[in-house]
Image: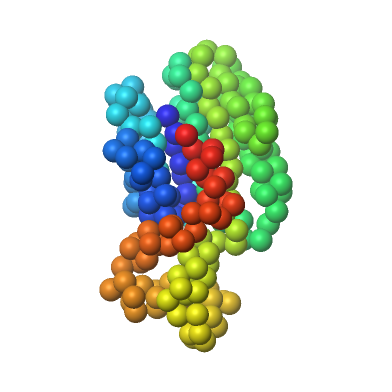
Length: 223
């Protein structure tokens, strides 16, 4: 099973749309940062959920939260199942090189696996293979495989640039606002062309962005 955790509702809308055709009815998306729901799906009913869904998409409330939720998923699932779980964490790079972000994630996972308050008897192992972190607990056959995927700058900026280029390439107000904060022009575009529905705008942008390298990476590694 694949679990894809991303920063927020906008990201979840975008990912849900690009995965719609591939996964058809075999995906479930949690838009409202309801981590209890995600825990439930990965917990006691996990075997049933895995037969029904191949992908769970979870939208949280920003970078600090998805990193915290990733740690919780690792602690609550590693060593408890005999089949593999793939976790892809998608975050905005905010101009930081991928190598730096990936190294930080590696260090965070290493530190977590050595935490005696989380793993009291057996410490899990971690290996890295082509930017994929493979976590294994001594008491189970199942592996937890974690990969970081990034969006250049931030998703809202990518969406606004693409939609504005099609709908209003000469709108100076949109372009000026985009320099400071992509959320404001996102709302302006949604109000003007999508009856105020930001999620509809974001879903529409997925077709326009489908050939971008970062979108191809998401499709390539989520399978």
